[in-house]
Length: 238
Image 1 (cartoon, helix red, strand yellow):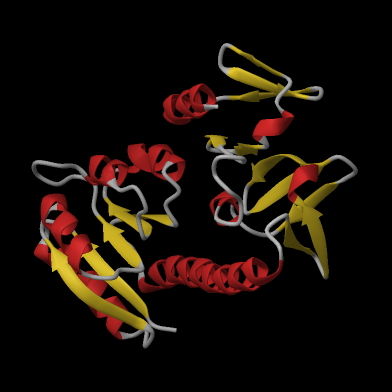
Image 2 (cartoon, helix red, strand yellow):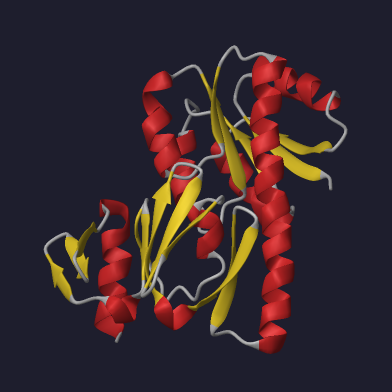
């Protein structure tokens, strides 16, 4: 599997470092380089990209602001000299956050994370196609060496836990090694909205909405600032 990459950085030297590292990884293809986020927007309209190497401090439009404009962004690895944006970057679900100057070893570690996510995405797309042929009322979840069939109507909510997710159902809790973003692709968004960077909920299971929280059974779940508007729109549309 080749990974199609886009470099977005206004420093030619920084671009060259990434290019040189990428040359030593056979499955990385640098399809384009951009010196600004504005230029990158146009590239994404015309090219299929799996992974963006994104600088933060750029003219006209910062890397973070650029990322916020993308509705369905490719995977993103932040490359920057500014450590203070790390938390914001992870809130936007970036794959990794590389501090300049970074070594090839650190670069390759980030690439391995992206590779695993893309392999999981391909597998999920295949599983989704197979599921569409059969039934859309359940999903299969891998946990350790077991695979559980989970009926959608049994799901209460899903919580992120580092590199894992915890899926709470009527009868049990299942821990699965995958990101919340990954499992989000398996679920119908109108029935299972993401209301926080760490939570997806079953809309039909809400007992109460009060302030910036929803209550499902005995659990109070926060509504994140970045998700509140979309969630309120969804509620009003019902």
